[in-house]
Length: 237
Ligand SMILES: Nc1nc2c(ncn2[C@@H]2O[C@H](COP(=O)(O)OP(=O)(O)OP(=O)(O)O)[C@@H](O)[C@H]2O)c(=O)[nH]1
Ligand SMILES: [Mg+2]
Image (cartoon, rainbow, N blue to C red; front, side):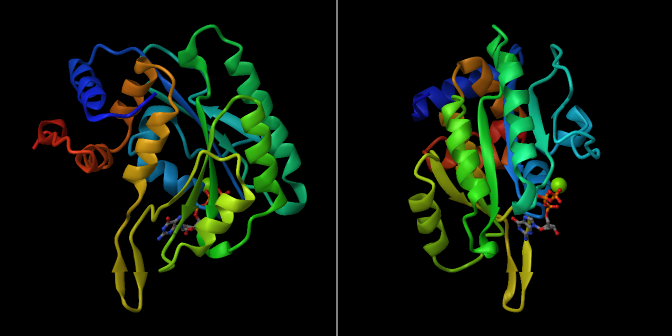
């Protein structure tokens, strides 16, 4: 979907009506410790309450919630954090789970996008990242690379990721939660950009409204503000 202020305002109005029935599905993949859980909880503050996300997973890939009902606005495909030496099983399981949901005729059942989570400080693009970017893209799922704890004061690693993973739709630097450093606290940032980019690849209005309703309100408001839409009413303030 193209993003322009008019369209976003329109979505916002519709989300206020609370008549939507759509759902957005996001697959979250990355090495162990990459920052998947931290990212999901920062982006979707109700993840635990509404989907059960965060409970230990038994399989390599599991949907939260397991089944969608009419009240489900978002679903997370949680995957086991992998080590480089044995990432394949997790990627296979995630692709299988995505294939299965995406067979449904109802788009609200689908995985719409994958977030490939990489800790910026790791400084390395691994074979697993390449494999995920290629195979999810081939499966028709747009992939956004999310660089977490991105507190370096240059964009060198981002440039490298762009170069090495040309399949990904965008590479977004975030700091999901505040970070204390000797020089002081670095506040969270980047989640509004992730929201905006994710929205761009969510196919239909129904799913887009669901994303808007589920993401943290401050993140949505910041994303709107960046394109000139002030929507304080949306925050209930
Ligand atoms: N400041 C800051 N810390 C982060 C960020 N992302 C992750 N962390 C920290 O990194 C550690 C690991 O993050 P998790 O979110 O647990 O990583 P994970 O990918 O879910 O790891 P597994 O579940 O083991 O696969 C935690 O201590 C987080 O607080 C970030 O963007 N900013
Ligand atoms: Mg985790």
